[in-house]
Amino acid sequence: MSKNNNNDISVEGLTFLDDGEVLFNDLYLLSETDEKGILTYASDSFFKVANMTEEDLIGQPHNIVRHPDMPRTAFKSLWNDVQSKGFWTGYVKNSRKGGGYYWVYATVLRSIDKSGNTKYVSIRVKPSREDIQKAIELYATLD
Ligand SMILES: Cc1cc2nc3c(=O)[nH]c(=O)nc-3n(C[C@H](O)[C@H](O)[C@H](O)COP(=O)(O)O)c2cc1C
Image (cartoon, rainbow, N blue to C red; front, side):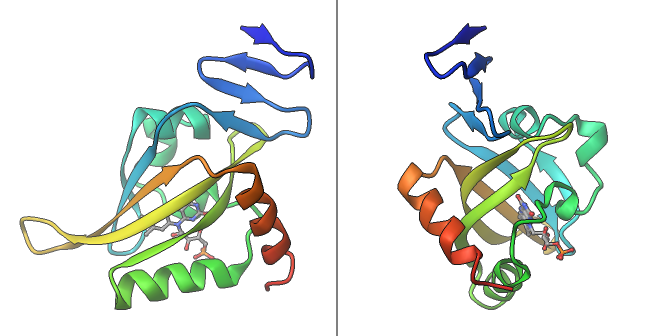
């Protein structure tokens, strides 16, 4: 554990800011769902940043990590785009179990598994401060 000049606490590659935001060092956070958005897989980095276990997440709808600040229109466009074009990219603010939140830049892709079933994969990376600020401003204007 370490503290910087702002009193932010860092532990296991996570930095906890005063207002509840959590920053992560991981290169990416991965999750997969079935056609209905039920979680079938998550990377260790996703479990860690979400502060959730396999029991908490796998088999649950992906909105289990939804943050109330996220506009409904963002997820409408996510589902519309992955179903029609096969991909969506965008900024997402997620809730962390036990309090706190984190921002990601997500790329969601449609994929077909060996049995011919549709699944969806999300690869999330850390957005820049400027991009987070732009997303906050944009999402404040959306429903
Ligand atoms: C592969 C994939 C990853 C998703 N990741 C997230 C996520 O990290 N956070 C989130 O709030 N919704 C995520 N969603 C969207 C949710 O399925 C859901 O649409 C959203 O949380 C809004 O909830 P609602 O559809 O019940 O209104 C993801 C969907 C897919 C297909």
